Amino acid sequence: MDAPPRTDPPTDPPTDPPTRSRARTAAVVASVAVLVALIALAAVLAFRTDGDPAPAAPATSATPPRSGADGGPAPDAAALLAYDPVDLAASPVGPDGTVTFASPGVDGTAHEVAATVTRPTGTPAGCAVVVHGLGGDRSQMSLVAAPLALMGWTTIAPDMAWGTDVGRVLGGGAGDREMRDELVDVRRSIDWLEANVDCRGRIAYVGVSMGAMGGVPIVAADDRIGGSILIVPGAEYRPAMVNAGIDPADVDISAWDPVRFAPQIDDRPMLVVNARDDELIEAANATELRDALPTARRVWVEGGHAPDAGAVLQIVVEARALLDRIG
Image (cartoon, rainbow, N blue to C red):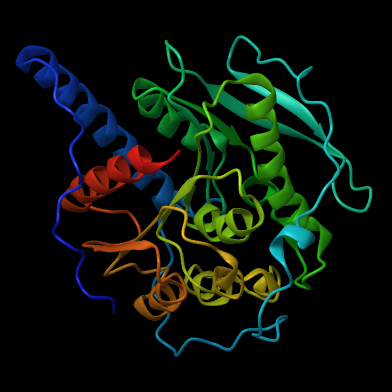
């Protein structure tokens, strides 16, 4: 396990006059508290099978070996996730905040991506793409986006097929087009932000569980992302799916294991949060990824896959500090 998180506090921003400063501080703390509480809710649903009201019991056997990947370095993420851009400026946001844009996909696998856009009331401080976990959907992350909007961030939350159509991510080779389509769709979501929003040169990636794990090759491939927050990720998909009661032979995406892409990530700000008693992302799986990301801010919190109240407070401080550093 990593050493306990450092205790040095983040640098405070310049203070305003006392009354306005207290009001602003209270508003920010409340907003971020809601944000992380909702992230925790999304984490509960990540890696959950359809119809299962609770997370699967932890596996008691040793972590099984990976399948479908040789365990060596991954291909270059930027080359693997390369795509032809399309004009997304003509994809307007509907009254309910939904935008639908075309994705030509990879190898001609055209489809549409639905996403929820949430805007702040004033000029955006930046933009974030927020990505849910396995079995989840964009509605969870659009709720996460609401307090981000209070802090001035415009967000886009795409629906990922790994939430509603797991069959689209079957397979496992590094050239597997279904998984590539999913990750490219996240990059196209960033395209949409750039075409339609003034992000002020500040773009963040926020992922939960599988959304956090898929974020590793995305961040490695896309230098537009100025910083990232990965909540309860692991190094390998297989042990997490075994713990969730999912047969990894049915959803073999081990060629996309985050640990294989981690060496391609530079020193952009990154926060990696894991829980000490996570029943799905066990300590060995979490530590393997954390060790592969030595320049990231790596934090252990108490509790399971869904952080408890004390963990939420800790994540609040860490997330605010990272967002302040982006750009």
